[in-house]
Length: 473
Length: 117
Image (cartoon, rainbow over all chains, first blue to last red; front, side, top):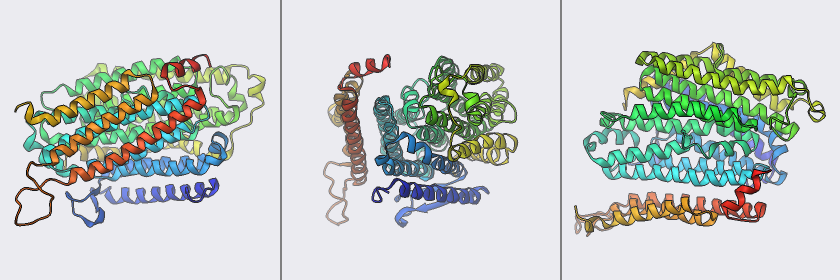
């Protein structure tokens, strides 16, 4: 793409690449859905010596999600990028987009701890560039801060992997899991767990390590926000799941340690504090960025239960939140394209000028709240079930209570968009172009489709949860 | 376990903490990147140092030698160094553009400029 030096050609190539990736991911998902495991040896070196790509239902589900979002967002990119990125940088944008996608998919399929780090850095470095392409000069500072924190996170992860490598002498995740129980009385295992947890938590923006996220999402180009919000943090959650449930689960390291309470506390803090901060934002993109931090809280809450229901809820919310947030940020991109800003004080009365965009945001907002018949409801329902199964009724109430905060911030948009008189500037606006509206509405409809027909998502997530809890092999 | 036997680990820990401290404590964006590099370098040492065995030789099988050093960590770290260089280059490029946009590379001079904007 860099060789071509042409924005249009690069876009065509990126579309072809993302759709091919989607087709391959769908094929892989169907192949492993029955419980098969696909293993590919790079350079034909058998694992654990060579790098192994190992795809079971969890990887396939994630790869499907990432490539689905990428395939939809790339179509949307064309108009949005034309408006927000200088023309001479278009080909670079698409090159970075494709690089980021390959990094994220690489994390999803690899079975090697160090290879995972390399892919993590590929996707992170390209996402720093993508964020820095934002029009606002604050995008630069946001990208810089993300770079510092992201690199610290990745380095922590490498320290953790290094300690595990010193203990076990292997980098293959499955092999590591098999060898770890023999050395699990060593304190270094605990240090490795701590380093990996903190490092990945930085990447997935677990509260209170989320500081890079709101600015990065708020000032990046709209298409980038939609893509990263829907995929990057989700992939990090997967890495966490992989380490907790595949690598460390057999070592008995979780026994007698208060890990679940720590995770539950942090998740609850994310759900409530980030939602509360979101309510007071003036920039709609920042608002939904904070809401992302809160939604990550739901995912980790589900995961921290460590039960089939909890994990299913976490994984299904991974998918559901990706679809919902993707839709929201894509629609907001339409407003940014027409108006140039998404500040609450500027978008009064937008509901009349851009009816499809605004209505879409409201519908996706409903899904964020968790209204029945949307995807948000499905995941919250399972979260509540998982909490009740543990016998913690107050956690179920907490899930419902924090949803009420989501009602408040979504209502703020409704109030501004529909009940304020449009300013002359807003009244002149036209609806967003079709090439942006169609992909965005596809996501909105996906919010409802997967809310009503939960076969693929819940089935996939349930199977993924069971395979994770079963442990390696 | 004596201190002297594990001196390489002490070096690593010192470098890691010094690097992280610079990242946190300095407001100058270039110095932050320097700190980040030192932090990353400490991790390179963490991998490379245990790979060498005293008296070990290059891992080419030969009847003369019994003890071999592990080459794999070096190869891994070669990759990590490349990643580190890329990160540093990107970080510095961002600093250049920040300088163009704000006329400063001090964090406490850049952040107030946007507060009223």
